[in-house]
Length: 222
Image (cartoon, rainbow, N blue to C red; front, side):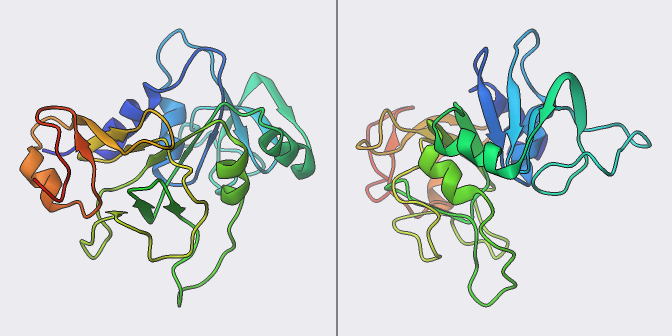
């Protein structure tokens, strides 16, 4: 059994801390806003100019004027504030955001991130991802472990155009959690989803990692 998308978001939300300012990427990361640990105060920021994003609105309560950077409808809070895109990116580039949780097409074993372009497909633009990985203090990737074609997304080196080099601190997928102590260290397997074996993970993973759940070994020597 692998984690569902909601369970992945719950696991990623465990990395939130009291008082954090957090930016969420489009896709699965948006679900994190619905899973903040009870009693914790976290402020979500959006590149399009909003601070204080609430949970996803209930059906029938959507306001088309309230959207996040991915154009999904959101809710506001009594503490919400609005500002220009330039002010929003000043927060990001100035190092004022504690954590960003992003999706990815590929992550390399060296922490490189590719999440904005597949050559030959329609290009919507890079959005704020490059600014986020350059300016935010900690970067977590929340993604499915394999692509739609079944190819591994944690790889020795990225084949797609990069968003940033050596920028990823943690990876959460439906199969596992990998983290590293700092950006000079290798990724370590720190958690497997319930019912997922190490052998299943290794078969779905191309990049090297250290297995901290048992023997210290890499993907290549497993």
